[in-house]
Length: 242
Image (cartoon, rainbow, N blue to C red):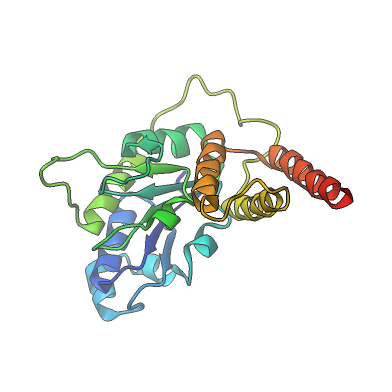
């Protein structure tokens, strides 16, 4: 029931942490591990720390960038222990499990964990629909990477035994847009806003970040995305005629 969920580690520095994460995943019946630009992998230390979860390491997929790793995902949830100057919609591990296991069991989900020392960067969180924060001691909120993954995986595993009595099926007739499809849409949107003169050079980055947050909250399906891209194409065509 958890085969649609992948754990994504970004920029992991210590190979032992990769092995410990693989162990935590196997404990809770998750088997899709993705690594984005790990410093050292494969590595004997990772295998040793996996303590028998060698199959998770053997099947791990390695990517050079986060957009590549999440391109097929319809839900992207980034984790963070740090307070951010810019706010993202936040959820707890239990709320995450409710969304991706109970309410959306057929939709691909990526749960993204950042670097041991600094976590995810803001431009990486821009790719996420939600920011996941693990409730803990406010005076000592730093969790080891594997410990954080274990907490999240436990909630995902526990949620497999819970039925959603209120669920009435999929969001609609069409599947949710993937991260790759949304990335293309954002490029198209930026191009169109620039053509019609809406963007100002010194404010374009903040405007696009806010627009991303709006559409990430909505969770567009593929039909809705087609409609929006049709509007963008028509806007470009009309601008070219003027």
